[in-house]
Image (cartoon, rainbow, N blue to C red; front, side):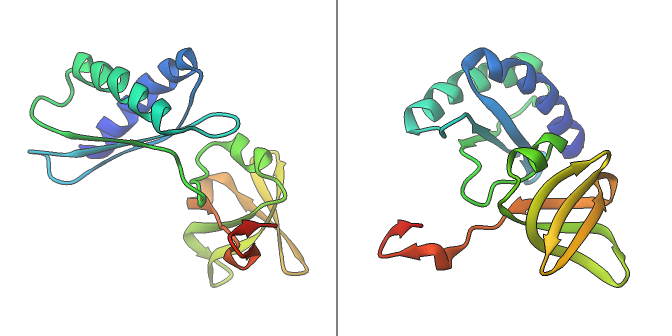
Length: 161
């Protein structure tokens, strides 16, 4: 049920977010059916701030209520995707080429369940990434979850390099 509601809300909010100058990154519905938590992750070129989140909270809440899928109480959490942003769309793998990412697979391939490496981009329906000295090709359909990996070692005295 939560996945169905998340899919419905994703479709609905993907259509609305650009009208507000935002990109919908992801929607999650977690918790129990009697009082679920709806998490909405938004972004825009250059990032979003607390004012953007507060404004988005209002219109997202209105849209969720108008959809009528959540008939009881729910908790709405609106935020940025954070520094280890989820990668959900095929275009994310091109957009973040050159960045380090973690890709977890639906099922192991050659006894390997995940890859951590630098995104290269897309080749048809496959994600290309450099894992050490090896170029790896991962089918989009075989990805269970993927996110950027922040390099905390790059922080030197509070500044990123």
